[in-house]
Length: 290
Image (tube, rainbow, N blue to C red; front, side, top):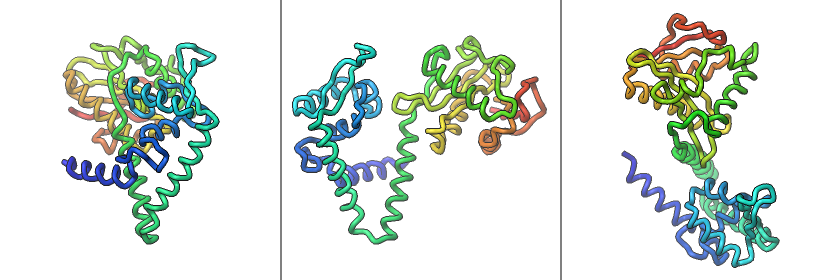
């Protein structure tokens, strides 16, 4: 459902912004090279991060960088801190070219808006904001991750830090009911991590107990990714995974200061129940049959 509309939208956008032209913005290069120039930025960028941001494979990125280097716009050299890391930087000519690209891009944007009246412009820009948000949401990847990996530790530590800021008495993981590495590794449980452009932006965990209720733990979404529906997506994925592993229900506990989480649980079909554990930081306990 919606595939025809998405394809029609893609065709319209690629034509209107000139993505089909080999000479994008009349600068003698295709759009891909200009996009890499812009993304490198005035501070430079390591090549691995650049590939992740643009979702390009290493071979294609290498070809783009070779072309830009040959044109005298980019230099690629090992990092002073770690020779295994390659850093792409704009030359002085590249910096000048990036400024021209900014000017030409503004002109292109103005040419899209100019034929429209004020009401149409407001509708178009609002629609673009919404499309950007939804396309960003569609780029988030969710997968089961070993809780010992750095990407998992980043999410869990960020979760602990946020609880420490928001709880009235702070948060000490050692006082809370455990959800350690073994408990978050199959068959005992699992950890889902959400990434956007290869950067961790959220997580959620399960502790499995056979056919008994599975426990949802460690629900966290980065402030940078809020508003994308990621919390609801993680919750739904945890429910599906719990059911696939034989659980007949999911349950969780939460603190009264996490008002957004409480609203999410209630709107997702969770019912408040009497306390089923002795979690010292909890004020509400919820359960949902599967």
